[in-house]
Image (cartoon, rainbow, N blue to C red; front, side, top):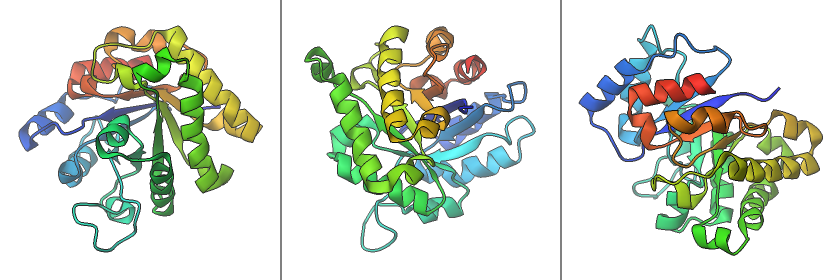
Length: 252
């Protein structure tokens, strides 16, 4: 049975005060304990978030993820944070290949694959992000693009590595724009990804969670998550509002 997962990506938002208030407003105590919940603060705030969650009676089950991870274990890489360093601070998940990293920082499919391998090597769960631009969708290349991105990771880490991953489909044109793929559009891509996983290994298709990301909010989460191949969400802006995030988690 596939896991249900909701991950909040806070991006470069938040102060110590606002994050403390946000965590105080999130309440996971009444949710199905089988649902995995995580939040991804900036690297600077990770230690504080881990500590606050560990002391919370309502949210000790919430895990912490990193928004990015270096592909190297150590060395002269100014500004980077290694996977093992994140693991030492209690991080359990790491986003790799988020569209903003691909687009703004030129991360290639191959670099994303190496980052996934680095995360696995440190005991983290990579959340492998895939998605097409608006132009690629308009040109009918959506499936080609997301399968190419997935295949690059498979080529690097193999089936055994993918077993340790979460996949997230996030259409670039729907991130931070207010636009959302319709449930049918999202399901179509998730189904194609599920087929590819089945081609690799039938068991893999039955166990790998595939999340949807792209302007997920309380008003559309239930309909998105009801699709047969959508196993939860990678949530951006709505995860910065406690009431919204609570409602999204409850829909998973």
